[in-house]
Length: 335
Image (tube, rainbow, N blue to C red; front, side, top):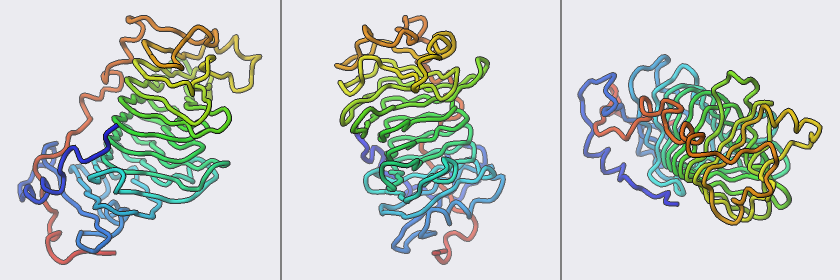
C-alpha cells in the first residue's frame, strides 16, 4: 500500500496562498502551518487546533511538517471543518504512551464533526497487555486518508458517527477496530500483531434500528499468527468484509462468540457478520460459524457504496486555494 506523497502539498501551499474570502467554498481553506523547527505558525499540533475559533464555519487546513510530535491531541466538538495533513505518513508521526479507560487513553481524539486527516501516523506506543487507544473518533462525518493507526489492544475506537477510511494501515492484536460507528474502510491494510488468537473487530451495535456497522471493501488482512474477523461487543453487532484479501492468519471459523457459546442462538438472529467474494488462504467459508453469512451480490450491494454513510456529500478533496487569517503572515506564533 502506498502511503507516500501522492500530492505535493508543500508546493501547492506555497503557490496557492490567496487573500480571497470564501467561507463555504470547499476548494478554499485557511492555512495554518505546524513546524517543530519554528518556521511555521506553531510548533505543536494542539496549539494549532486551539487557535481555531469555536463554532468555526471555515475550512481550516493544518499542514504538519515532518517530525515526531509527542502530543496527546483533542479536536473539540465545537471546532468542525478541520483538515490535519502531513505530506507522508511515515515521516509525520503523532505519538503518546497511555493506557486504561478507552475514552481517556487515546493519543488522538476527534470529537468534532467534518474532520479529515491525511498522511499521518497516529500511535499509542504503550505496548501490549492493556487497553491503549491510538485514535478515538466520536464526531460525525470524519475521514482518514493514507494514515497509519498503530497500537496493540483497542487501537482504533470508532465510537460513533459516520466515518470513512481510505488506504489506511491499522495494526493491533485485540479488538483493534471497535466501537459503534457507521464506517467504511476502503483499500485498507489490517495487520494482527497477536501471537495467540487475536480479534480484528468488536462492533457494538446494540439495537436493530441502529444504522451502524463496519464495512471493509477491497482491504487486506495479514498477521503474525491467528485472528478472527470479529466478535460481538453488541448483541446486534454488524460487520461485512467484501472483495478483501485474507491471509491464513484468519482462522477457518472466521468469527468468535466472545466465549459465550450459550448465546450463539441469539447471534444467529441478531448479529450480522457477512462476507462477499473475499479471497486468499483465510477466505474459505466452508468452516465458518453457522451464524455468519456468505452474501449474494444483491445482499452485498448496499455495503459497497459510500452512499451507506452519505460520503459523497461530505468527504472533501484537498483545497486548491489557501488564504491566511488576519495577522497570520506577521511574526510566527511559536509555542
